[in-house]
Length: 230
Length: 299
Image (cartoon, rainbow over all chains, first blue to last red; front, side, top):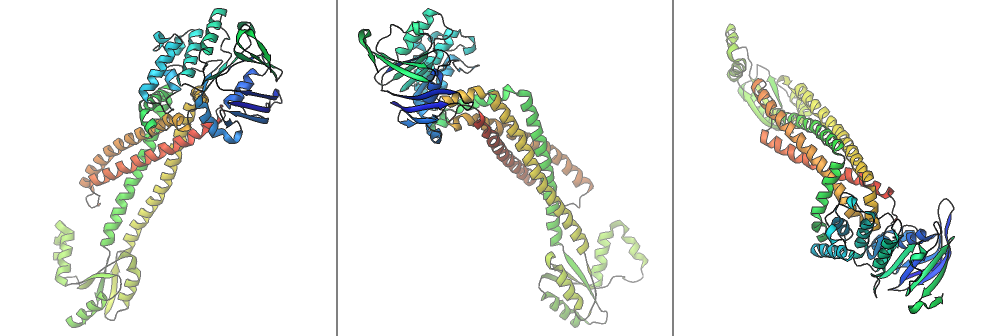
């Protein structure tokens, strides 16, 4: 599903964000990308979204090579991805329902189904009662949930969540993580970046990408907290 | 296409939102476009009217050939036949002294009594030669050279002057069309760019969600189209008002100016101005939309 071979990312100002990383992610996996601020977590997600291109090495997401030359195809690839942005990127002046529907309007989904999917997704994140509220009137946690609803409503093959627990209190943060991990199934891979490692320390059946200064160490945890180092 | 039709409501709603976001600027653009198109419409009207005048006067292009008085009827008839054979001549008539006198009476109207001052008919018989305007020069030369022709009178100068006015208006029209085109495109593309930058956050989010360029850009294209079509309608309304009043005034005080039928003129102007508005709206928007590439969200 995702394959990275010797990928490096160096920004124009010379900052080396990722240094020669390699990994493989299969379908239906749950991945936590952890590390301190500035370690390269968001850069990794940007690469997976095609917002940046590797400066060396090769990266393939859902069989789509991430290169500058493939920019048009990458736009199409994004239709199979459900992104949850750190700052939500909800469109103000619209209702929660309109925001969720917005992510599906240009997909091959009939209009009625779009509305149905959006309402279902809002219901799944516990916000069906706020469907017709404008997003600027929602609380931080509610806006986060709308953002998740928008990502999952279109039934993506890959969910990418960038720091979804940031600015949330402990309980709300746990709820959001539980919610996101609940979308992992045989067809959907979920990748979550977080610097709040204490929230996931007991998590099993997941893979942990520990990013530090652009390098990655990978740990796979199976059922019963059994640890397998990759 | 199906996806486009399904999203019509969304596109219209978006266009309305983009316009209301910069309402005052959009109102000024609408008024500016309307006035610019009005100027264009007026030039085209002038263009059509003088063009028609030239066409009508060209049909009237004629020369009067005066022959020697010693020619008998047979000689004059031979002369008429020879003139008929000249290339560029489409009608030749012999105008007798009596007819020439009566024509002058018609022209002078109430002042015709001055002709009574003459003891005899002062007008000479002549040959009236109707010709194609573009052939006036060679026809004049050939007729003048004919044996028996004393002199030839023509209205070439008047025709050429009207033709030159029409040509000047045509050149002015082309220049104004270019100026209007550039001005309108600059106004519209500027408005579209402004709209895009005001909505750059939303555009970027849509890009990151994988929305195609056509889905992102179509509401902006609609905005450009609505602004220019609105401006076009304003221009047409102003022109109809001016044409209505102008026709009433000209047909009353200057009845000899050959105006085209009003309905035909208005219909032609409406079609022309609305077509130009639509074209400029779409091209101005597309020009403005090219700036969405500057917004982040690679791919």
